[in-house]
Image (cartoon, rainbow over all chains, first blue to last red; front, side, top):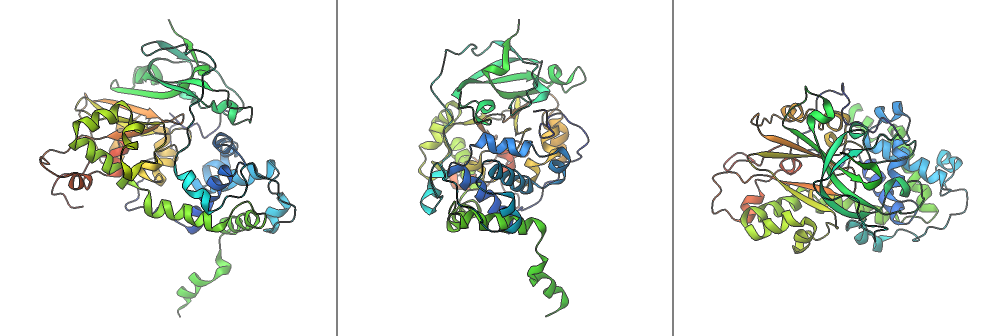
Length: 220
Length: 207
């Protein structure tokens, strides 16, 4: 979706303000939110792409005024309510009022913590041979799905060069909508700064994205 | 107790967000979805075990050991997997090398993708709009916000983390560190130098 989360190339947000000696969490609740998002995902309530899509679906004005972990909290509440793990009435009351819905992987307990500290693997068996190879010129499609996609707007319609093949991986556009993993070839594609931003751009700039094969078409 | 202290101890002062987080955790616990002790363990891991020191040891090893450096640039997941102390990196790590000709910088314009296992949880600025919006269009301007400048002919390569690949920048080894041990070198490697928004510390600089 063309949401406000897709920020690459937007102007007006001001300077980057780095905090010296920043703590891991600024408030205790931030850690609780991070841990709940990880735990409920590992328990099988949703996959990582669905979780991202719920944050992207926050209204733009809410997205922009919320802190990072506030976005995580709001996305988690909506996600769990939509999937029937919690109800609006429970969220308002702050207590369980209905029976639990079974989780695919069962309760997330202490024994599960080690498992999620190892990053998941997204590589899958290919459905077909890769269409592109390193050195190929490709155009990022001019596409505007209303649902989750990982093709940023600033790259759409522009021509780049395939630099690496990154294997065949879970396709977020399908997984986010719970339409299956639909594995697709993934490429690192590099674009010149002037191709993306015009002739006034920094001539020394190159930007790469990781693009799934359905995002790309051959460029002559 | 002064009024000021009292204010801080007063639990009725919980913010709306804190109340919502408590409510949600209570529901998830009552329904048997999560064990709160498991949440504690996740938080503790990110607060105490997983941080930029993991990435710093990898960088220091690459600076000291040419064979490891080649292996790291060839297949970072595999190379890091051979180190006992940071073996939890998963399968999709790529290390990119800074050279006098090319400087690398990592961003996630769409959200906050970041090599957690190497660097810990990302800082607020990495996840915030100013960095995400500008890194791909005006990286020199972003670097200036960090007090960093590059020669004008240096190529800048920005890696937008739009899939599950995670990128670790291998910064250039500072001059004047000949003969240093890996442990000494690791002390020079900053978090920002592994994102590409900073350089390693110089030998003798205050830490």
